[in-house]
Length: 85
Ligand code: SF4
Ligand code: SF4
Image (cartoon, rainbow, N blue to C red; front, top):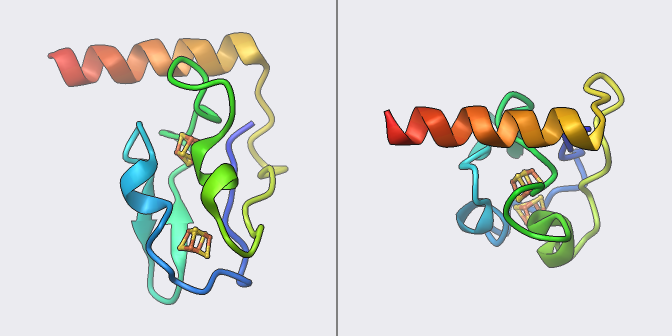
């Protein structure tokens, strides 16, 4: 599953620099997560870093992007290959 940021976000800027996939960016009003880049931190960390750090707990699973751990690992490898290219 990719994660998503709800409108409870207070734009504290804590999560964005900690995402290992550069999946978090400032949208029009609040921070947002690019589901194509979010691996739930699979491949990098045991726990989603943004969820660990968010002070208002506004980062749930995105129900529109349901993925297995294997699919998340595939996404991780694809992102790594892009970085290396
Ligand atoms: Fe980035 Fe990990 Fe949060 Fe996904 S779960 S947005 S990869 S920090
Ligand atoms: Fe928003 Fe939470 Fe990220 Fe802060 S850590 S910018 S409140 S999603």
